[in-house]
Length: 148
Image (cartoon, rainbow, N blue to C red; front, top):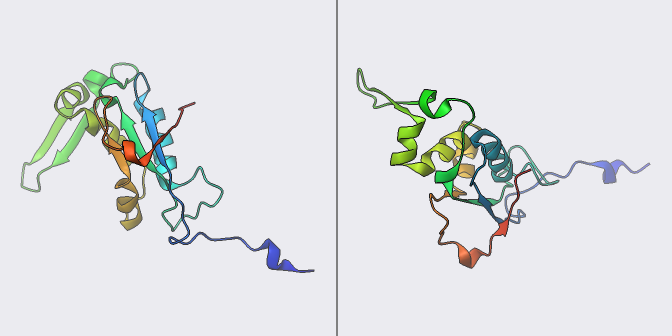
């Protein structure tokens, strides 16, 4: 019996074919939207997924200012950062962050779902989030990706 045909094929970074996807975030829940984005960025939607190789696609998110949270998260959810100095902890609630940086809500949610290493930082660079419906990536001919 020839076991050569049963070997698992590992993807190589030179062989990866990347596509561009566009997602309209209008009316979508942040958590469900960001899990789908993280899966596509990571490449888990492809049969050639390899955990240690960046096999994912590029993702453009438009209308980031029109996402939704369930419950009272707009007033209760806090994003915490630190300046690095003593007493430098900063807190901002979700509704204020939406006014200042509407794209940051999706970026923070997706970044938290990616690996915390060199691969995760490389994967995150393939995400482009825009507050409105305009984006400068028309030349890449992105395909619309539906969130189920």
